[in-house]
Image (cartoon, rainbow, N blue to C red; front, top):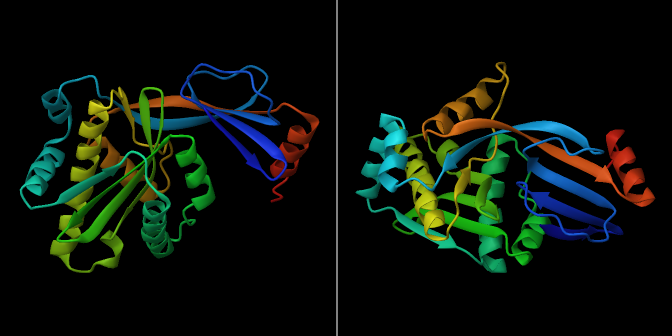
Length: 247
């Protein structure tokens, strides 16, 4: 659960079917719920889940052969993995700076630093990165709640490199990065690794390519629901304005 204020609006976020606690809020959101919450506006959300209760050998064996090969090769190339269970502001700023460079190259939105800090203050943020000889190659950001870790942001230097060898190295680093995150979360008692979304369509080639990458890890695609309700008049007005496309 994450409780935040955006101006005069109080927002209560629940995640992954966690137990609910009565709190005063203007807007309540049920994120990635397994069912449609009655009385709420709900939209479908697809994602890929991996069961971390399995042994590490079982996790690896469920992956596609290429992914296993890339992970093992990366482990022999001297890549360094770093994990931050309680990142400080300087680490968050380092992540945001890296992600914003990546986002500019791909035409994506910048990292929502304010939201990331709020997630951190709630004790739900995890950051990790992989580097080689002091140069950061990839960053991952996760929201953790209960027994699940959900990837929220992933960034790499892949697009900024033109050398085929360097791009291949970064691809290996990213697969190695996901594997090391899984292993780390296992040690923390996390039971589900959430790859943070799945494109259910068939038209967008870029999103289909991302799907293909996520398929390599051998998870299962599930449909869940994001449900929102304005609890107070103030909350209902804000949601109504947003539905009209106003900011």
